[in-house]
Figure 1: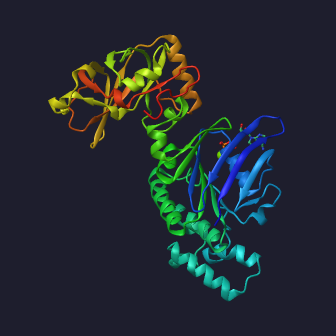
Figure 2: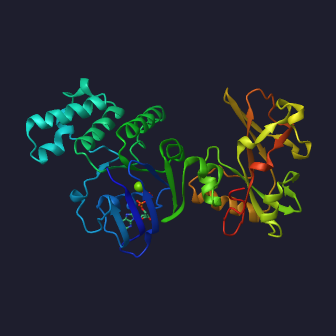
Figure 3: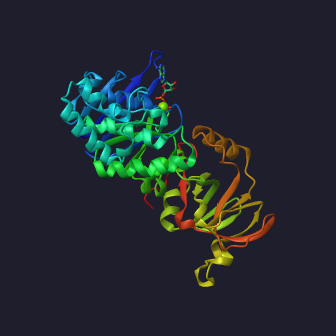
Length: 387
Ligand SMILES: Nc1ncnc2c1ncn2[C@@H]1O[C@H](COP(=O)(O)OP(=O)(O)O)[C@@H](O)[C@H]1O
Ligand SMILES: [Mg+2]
C-alpha cells in the first residue's frame, strides 16, 4: 500500500491540447479517491499516467514517496481494473486469479495459499473451477479484484468498472467495492462520470472539468459547499436549481419573489448586480406539511406546480418560471458542460411524501434561503462558500 501524490500533472497529446492541465491531488495511504467529471474531462488520462500507460508531459507522480514518472508500469506495482475486467475466458477463476503469480514463477504451494486467501475474502470459493463466461458481472468484478489482491499491489485503480452493468447490479457492486476497499484498506483511485457513484464510494472526490481540477473534497463538502457553478450543478440528483437573483440590503429577489437573506450572505454579495442563486430541491417545502410555528411567512411564495412525481417516500414537483434570454443561455451552457439536460428554467422541488399538492395548481412553498448559495454568473465562483 502506498500514498499517491500528483503534483502539477500536465498531459498534452500530439495536438498540444492539455487533456490534463496542472492537476495536483494527494491520495493518502489507504484512501478511496474518486475522479469524477463529464466525458472527456481527462479522468482516464490521469489514471493512465498513475499506472504508467501514458507519458507525463510535466509534473511529478510520486507513489510511496518515490518519483515514478520514468518507471515502467510493471515496476510501479499497481493494479488496474478495467471496464471489461480483462479476464482470460479459457482459464478458470482459480487460474485467472493466479495469473500474475504464475507469470512471476511462484511455487505452486505459495500460489495456492494466496489464491485461496483471496478467494475467501472475495467469497469466490464455490466458483474457483468455473470459467468467467459462466459468472455474473459482480463475480467477474471480484475475480478481477482477486488478481489484484494476490499481487499485493500498492494501489487499486478502477476506470468506470460498473458502467456496463444494469442499475440494480451497479448498486450492488457499488456496495461491494466499498466494503472490500474498507476491508482491504488498499489505496484506491476510482474513475467515474456518475456523480452517485462518486458520492457513495469515495472518502474524497476530485471533480474535473476539461482537464482542470475544480474541487477536491469529501462528498458532503462538495454537496454542501461547492466552490463553483459547475460543481454545484454536477453533484446532486436532481440537480441544484439555478435562478437569476439580485441582492439588496438583506433581501434577495428571485423570479418568484423577494425574500430575507442571512446577513453574512448579503454582505458577501452586496453591489454585485445580477447573480446566480443556487438552491437544492430539498430546501423547499410545501407549507401545508410544516408546523405553523416553523414557517417564516416572509420566506414563502405561491408557486404553480405543473408536474408532480410521487415516489412513495418523497415527491418532486416542477415549477416553471420565466427568465430572460441571457439567463437561459447560461443555464443551457451549464447543462451542456455537465452532460445534463435537466437545468431548464423550471424549479425542481422535493416535497414531503405527505404533501397533497396537485398538478396544474397553485400551492404555497417555503424556501430556505439559509441554505442558498450565490454565484458570480461570469466566473462561476461561489461567493457564499463557507456560509
Ligand atoms: N490517445 C489520445 N490522443 C489524443 N487525444 C486523446 C487521446 N486520449 C484522450 N484524448 C483526449 O483527451 C481528453 C481527455 O480524454 P479522457 O482522459 O479519455 O477523458 P475521460 O476519461 O474523462 O472521458 C479528450 O479530449 C480526449 O479526446
Ligand atoms: Mg474515460
